[in-house]
Length: 186
Image (cartoon, rainbow, N blue to C red; front, side):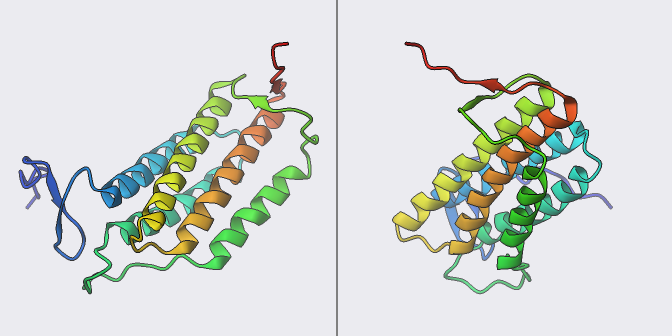
């Protein structure tokens, strides 16, 4: 027996949070977890293009955390759910920091801003970083509007965007692609 992918319940522009609460598809909470879903897809694309043997394993771990974050954001915080949502932990943040530190060991210190580009895998990683920053901004907006959001989600997304920036630089290093420094027009 196969389930149909379409339910027709969202045809009028609303959807349900985990817990059953109906909200418009334009709701900030929907925007947040939709952006996390977009980020997760880009992380998959980055993983498919990686030249570093360890990166796809690390990126799968990150994708798992993004499902955790998306699930948390999809829940109505005012309702108890029967679903067991996994927790994001501080060790998830320290994991990203350790991966950043490992990559930074072989990278030259930055002397200017870097223009994204040089190879499709580098550029794709920068696109993922930008989507991550957008997800972080949306979550901060939720927090500013007094919408319930776990502060660790914002911290994780902040560190993840740092990780993606360093991964883009590390990918350039592994591919022997020269970074493109930004030189301001005078």
